[in-house]
Amino acid sequence: MRVSIYKQIAHPTAIKEQLLMWSQQFREIIFMDSNEYPQEYSSYDCLLAVDAFTAIKTDYYNAFEDLKQYQQTTKDWLFGYLGYDLKNDSEDLHSNNFDGLNFPDLFFFQPKKIIALKGNQLEMHYLKMCDDEVEEDFEAIMKQGSKINTEHSKIAIQQRISRANYILKVNAMLAHIHRGLIYEANFCMEFFAENAVINPVEKFQKLNAISQPPFAVFFKNNTHFLLSATPERYLRKEGDLLISQPIKGTAKRYSNLEKDEKSKEKLASDPKERAENIMITDLVRNDLSRTAQKGSVQVKELCGIYSFLQVHQMISTITSKLDPQYTVAEVLKKTFPMGSMTGAPKISVMKVIEELEETKRGLYSGAIGYFTPEGDFDFNVVIRSILYNQENQYVSFSVGSAITSLSEPEKEYEECLLKAKAMREVLE
Image (spheres, rainbow, N blue to C red):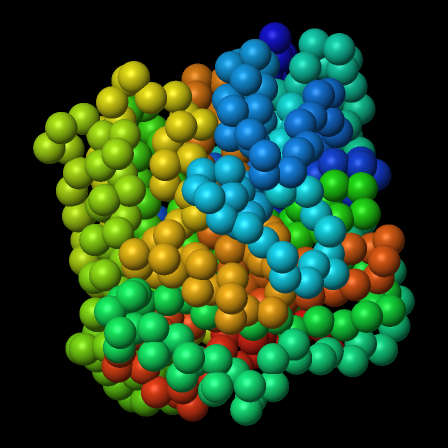
């Protein structure tokens, strides 16, 4: 079905930028960059998919069944995303909050052209209908300049929830926790700008440069853009092995080495941060057990500390062996949305979130990634991301923090501002 050509590359870092720039001629683009971040589970340093041959776009109703049919029919590489509101397909839930972005709940496409970078080797996997374009494209990529248009409008970022209102809402959430209805909730708020004209490539490059996360993504579907610097993996499948790596726990980075090390140590021993992480690890174990071979769910690492350019994070790794009776779409349906973006218990928390948040999450706190022809997949968690609807000139990013019984509303608010810093810097 695909023709594969392999090329040796002298300068792998430079070609990433050339691939991103070359891709801009297409209507559909997914560009993924691991930024050479050291990680145990990884297939490529960089992956680019462009130009849809077929695609699926739908709202949440029956979405996972539609995805299952599409994936089983094409049996090919598929790239795309799952929006947070697919929760309404899995459970009896609703989303009536404001949505300025208007992205579909689910979108996947079968690309005509896939280019993957691993070390010094570039792999070009083209559908047969366009395999005669491989050499011409390779030449064009190698000649691609990096000049970009930096024209943009002055962006005035507004906050959807004021500080005072945020504190009131967190206190309302704490009341639910103290009554025993929920244990932990991920509460998010939106920052946005109207009449915004930005160059998405330029903003992505800036965001990626100041964050350098392992799961960076530039996504374009016509006039819908995602510019993501996420450090978090939602779920990966390698054969029958499933890997989930939830993040819960954040600490500030410092240029002073001693202060930075202290911040890291404080995070590692912080009882509130550890409690948050352990609760979500337990939830992920439970989610994975729904499709796992008996006794195969394992916590490979609990509360590991990982450093990124902007923040230190606490990450756990949970694995399971997939029971062959379940399809890949069923695995996603039974684990989505990821526990790190909801809280526990999941369904009760999602109802409270819907009641207290003021924006429909959409693609934020959803997942973006790909399926291979063999049915393996890898999906990130859409956080630390800028979303842009070019048509209605609306730009948005959201941040959140985990609320537990130990939470202090003012400190949670400060954590949100810390997480918002990189996106705000890039846009303003």
